Length: 85
Image 1 (cartoon, rainbow, N blue to C red):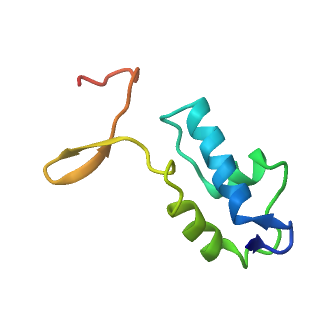
Image 2 (cartoon, rainbow, N blue to C red):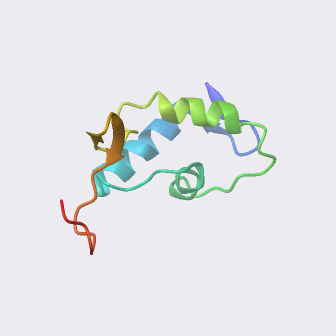
């Protein structure tokens, strides 16, 4: 299914880009801009953004590993200065 008509980006391309980014760096924060850049494209009108984000959220490798503190998910940050955990 085409998600971004301006750039001709399909849902499977978005999932592939997210899988590739997550494999390269499991802790990276993935944004629509990073997905566009990974695909060698840029956003144009922004009309696809709701569907683009929905497609990203449905990708199995999209979430960042988290832990819970006080009932709220907290990203696991490794190698960050000042982090005591």
